Image (cartoon, rainbow, N blue to C red; front, side, top):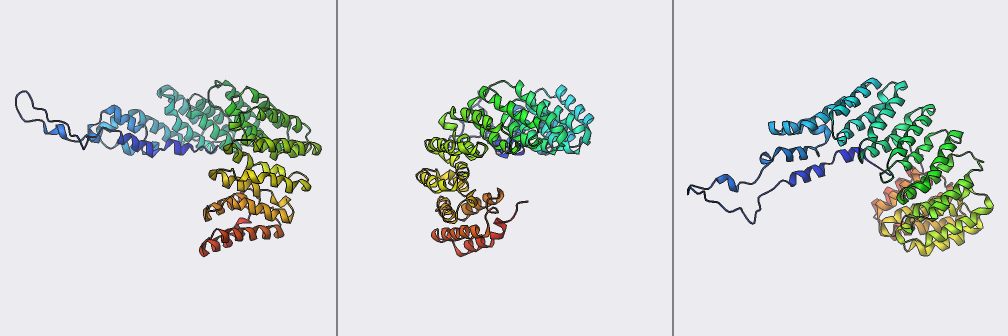
Length: 451
């Protein structure tokens, strides 16, 4: 989930749409000229197009709601009518300015208390509270935890946009806290999530993601992980479909020999197989990529079951599953690799154009685990998904592989095989000479460590 709250709060297009909604005189059918009863001349203003200065204050106020908060002062200065119509928006602007200057828990509490007593519409709290969130690190270290709670609780009272602020706090603010405070703040956020109505959007997926910020393998981590797994069955289907893949990912934070993982994996598997086919892809693929948490004797049978489920999915969900499925395949004993990859070939023909890049990444992610002959073949299959897509698509896939460390995992011999297939791909797709040079010159960067 990448949510960009700044983009949501600074929607210039919506602002312009509001301006364009103002009534305009129809060019093809000018209004008729009405003769006054006295027989005098018609009012010449009757045919004049409506301008901004003719708009009623209520419409100016609606336009002002779309003005980015940092531009409210400038917009209010357009004229006297605008200044008065923007009274409520100017109040939000003033609180936003104050939020960008808070330096203590006391100033946070004072601002939130004043806003609660002044701003009747909860939606007016969004921009000041988001500014407070971004200001949290500027507060004294010992006050940050309480300030986090106060802001998080204030966001809870904002319909719709409040949960987006909470998600940002869990994913982008919580990691900045010391280990000793994260458990307490996680529990606070979990308790707040329990208070939301079942039909409301919630933060369960973000809570699962933030488990990665707790102490790996600790009793506290395991307890909170188990609580989220236990909650799965009570969630809506859409929430389950989002949460299961993240809970799979968080399994890497258990202790290396933790024998609770197979049991938890079985719960996730059971819930995933009950999901509708229309949302099953990510869960099936991710569970296949985590068969390594199972006893070795069970891995092949479990992968085979999940592979069959994945191949039976609708095309849109098949592409999602294939992003993760090959990673589980490469965890099988080597004697199964070639056969299992061959079984995927017909499915590659079904991959939708919009999903080919992500499936190519899935195929190429773990090629370092394969023998040389299979590395060559898998790189051919993966790159063939990009046929006709051009230089940008190839760079995108190689950049994603770099970001997750997949290229760096290849030894020199393996990388030379991959590099040869990249060259053949560029030749087959008739890349221009400058494009080939750009790709070749980027090789050191593709093999470098992301910073």
